Length: 503
Figure 1 (tube, rainbow, N blue to C red):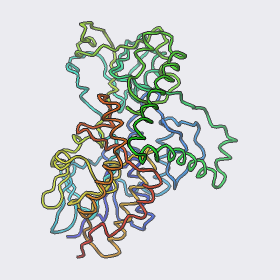
Figure 2 (cartoon, rainbow, N blue to C red):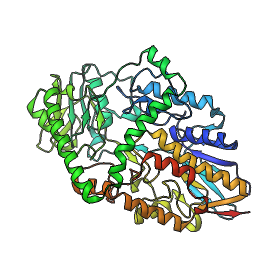
Figure 3 (cartoon, rainbow, N blue to C red):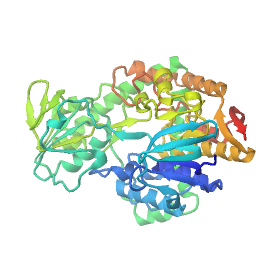
Figure 4 (cartoon, one colour):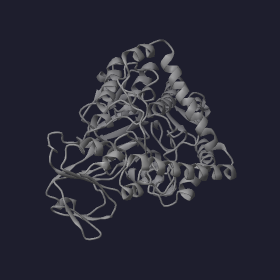
């Protein structure tokens, strides 16, 4: 049976765009980009909440094949980031491959015909020889915050990924649940316009100063000079490399005291910083994390901590008992009334085994990815390929993030997938699958090299609720290697590690 497409890419966010460009660069024209929403852009399309922007420098948050010298700020705002991704897709002609409002419910391998059957939300089935899953790191916003009574609340519920800009917050009583990355941006953005703002904190977040400012036209002109942007980006990667190398490869007896010293020194410095920016002593103490700066995702903001100096903004650290018709009741019995509740409670992540539902991805001989991950933990060869899932790769998979921007990650993994697809086409192979021995050897190496990272989260910062550490006690969010090593591996991994089956 001849498949409808040679390659299908699931997802048209930053990863899907990277995969599409890599396919076109390799001369592969028969591919489709499937997107569940009405347009491409991923998280930057969905998240338009007040104050949204990148939390790494814009120069590092872009594709190496489409550098943008015209960023308006050091840390670009959300609308500008979305416009950049759309412009890249336009430049490389990806829209003619784009199929929007298309949800993939189930991926099923057809062994006799050596193709994937993709069961879509409209009931149809789309076939493809190869599949690249580019659904990203932040899969689906958590609809259930884990607190009872949400349906009883009679006011407005706002979610970062579906913000209703028509709802006026002026003069309203607002509660923000959570102090993660989205809350750090939303809280100071809405505080000046609301009547009263309560921020409910379960775990304090590290919130560091953000060196953000507009980039003047003269600086943009310099960035347009040949070689300047690659050089600056290379210097940033070099700095990250210097930090990652000892963190990953230092002997554990050396790494542990160094990590303890880092955490202790950072907390002392942060306590001093809080004293400079937060006036209320009780708020300062409540905002001080009891864990190290890398125990949870650190955030950047010049305004979040200072928001608690406002008369209308309050930090609430008492645990929430439930939502009520009029607001929120905490476990001390106090009920506070609100007009609006903002649920900044996060996403289902690629690193959570619960994100892989049984029956969603089914490979050769009934292999079920969800069941495998639930029983054996998350794992994948070079973070992209799993045995018994022929002709399939994941761009943001287990043990993939290297501490840099996501664009570097998806370029690395897209290059890996397209390299194998290109080789399969050259050999005339209709099925290609990572060998079990190569996969197991790689995963064992990942576990061995990740011992320092695992010790930091499991032992030194035990008990901290962090999406770096999943429900199985693993840290599959982080790749225990340097950026240079990951890039090199994507170009030089032995093709013999894959098993090619000819027609």
